[in-house]
Length: 63
Image (spheres, rainbow, N blue to C red):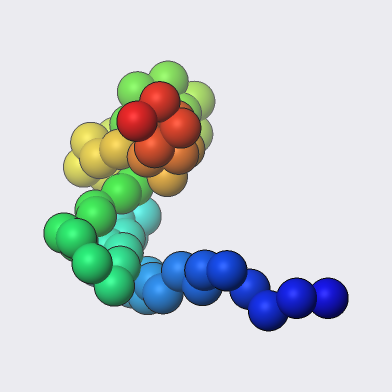
């Protein structure tokens, strides 16, 4: 098996409750959490509205 072509370097830390912040090797820090129907489904009214991790995946796929 050949050596990896690319290795992503990222760290994720808990900010508060469901709020997380990811830092990647190059680029801005990304804040994510919960919003919309998912937030309503789990009755998490106190959580701030932040993009879900899947929102970033969808945006990266389209970009």
